[in-house]
Picture 1: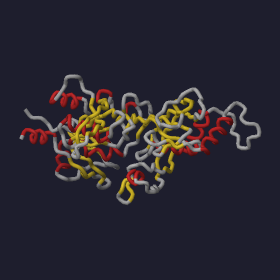
Picture 2: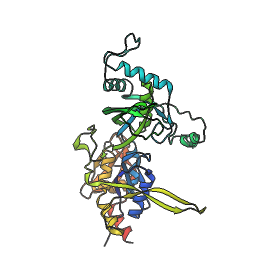
Picture 3: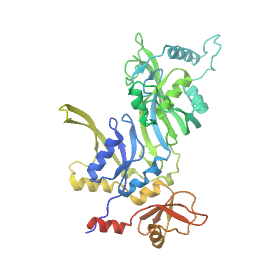
Length: 396
């Protein structure tokens, strides 16, 4: 019996506390496939959509990485942290606290009598909506976080920052197509832990804070931590990210995505193709004889499944190569004869304007990624073996 070499995409709902590489390792181990990669890193504190490709579908990752994305997040206003998120140390700024008191008075009914810079009577919701609309939507310039993976002279920015070196990153253009305030909660914190929950009672020394739930849709390369930092800076009170969940990458979305930026008919139905996961701990002894405990990503598959059964269950929940290609980029239906020409590196008589997946619909065979050669021809830039060839290789 012939078996094709597996190729496709898994939509993993990444849990908190593990890296994107941990999730890739979990898929690689479960599918027993070496060629596995992901389309866009999620920080360990973040959860949500992680598109993982395996087999020939890994060649589609560059296209998927460039897609716009949707996040749901919580921004805490009133304090800052060293990393602009809940993994850093809290920074209590006296000037920010003073500004908070001024804002609170201005936003109270009637405001402060004689306050020269008093804002009109408004709620926090109104203030946040206006501030976001004015400064953080459309095409903007954003300075990435110091603790980011951007390379400076060959070194990661976060490595330089941890070494105590000055890190200066240049602004870069990003596009924010949606920045919606979903909910606001006020309270107090001690200011000792970045993850501490808000409380209602204002004990001595308590710091007022505001947790703002938001939904953000943005271009690739946008740092949500930087948006939290910059919103707090614009208001003068400080801000950092306490929660981050990615709900959509291009047309690949979790069932709970509510952005609505892409028409439902254009979205891929990933409800039956989403695999949840959880964080577990693994203890081992390293080469120095030290006992080390670290988190690992465990894919949630039906209880009792192992080996080939577990592998087959995951493959059944993966998007096929055709589905992956149609979700990754524009697609063009071609004939089997055109597919043969492309696989020989020849041009076909087709008019396209951007990189496109060439697919034989009758056989669901992805032949190539093609680009414009001239006004009436397209040429292959990436060629995929036919499913029949895959089957022969697998049986050999």
